[in-house]
Length: 224
Image (tube, rainbow, N blue to C red):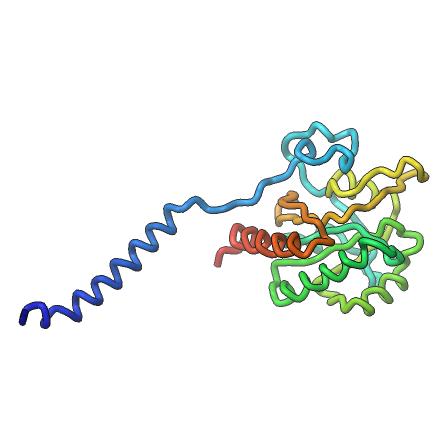
């Protein structure tokens, strides 16, 4: 009994250290969860330009040059080394855009202090959504300029980004050249300009999934 009392403290410390080591080993042996890398062939063909519908590898977001709510030219260089969430909308949309924007405001609140994450919203009616219109909308919604770019520009360029890069809108067969029917999709893009997730921007549960998978992607690229 005397020996046990003498070594009780030592045994207690040893037990705690052993438990920590076992937990570290367990975590190290667990497979690291990674998000899929989406290719055009994996996505609903209605959302993908016919020229790339069967592409199974090497897909990435193309270079772009658009104008944001402050009249600044925004290119892929502004997102270099960043994770970002992209979507397609228009400021006068009376239906799903309302919920989509409200939910992106919530995402903005969660990522506003994270230097690695940004948001990018493309107007599908660029003639209507002028810089002044985008600025008015941004102010109404509480957009933080450094975190969230609302962009307008050449209609063909936006159309091609939507269907050849982000795989996120339907072709409007009843419209004119480069008309598109935007969807509720939010698209998660990694620092290598690859698509890593699609989410229903009108669904609260999907927004929670986006936030959870955003954490996984942050851990993949910025573990420390």
